[in-house]
Image (cartoon, rainbow, N blue to C red):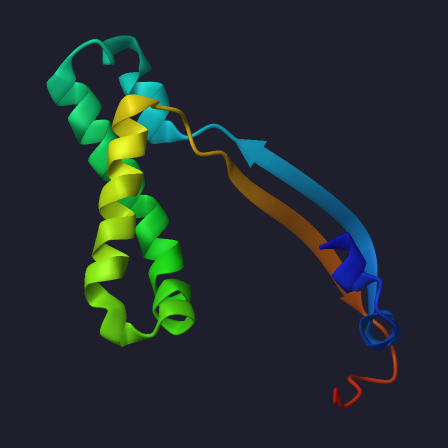
Length: 111
């Protein structure tokens, strides 16, 4: 994020007052970590984590592998769920809080 904000076009339009990257633990894993010996709880966590990853990655997967590869895409997410079951771990959520100030002179056209 810092590199993007350092590009000439953006620096010409905005001043960065603050950049505050923040990583928070996975709430799904935090709730389940004391019950991972229970196969049902472990299955539930694995399914939830796989759905979360799928929610933010499926469109990229379809573009990269072409939508006609539905079986392959399903297999990838099924394997991911199996992997989360075998080795459960939290997915870190990363945020970047920015405070940008628009510089005088307005926006320039980006090409």
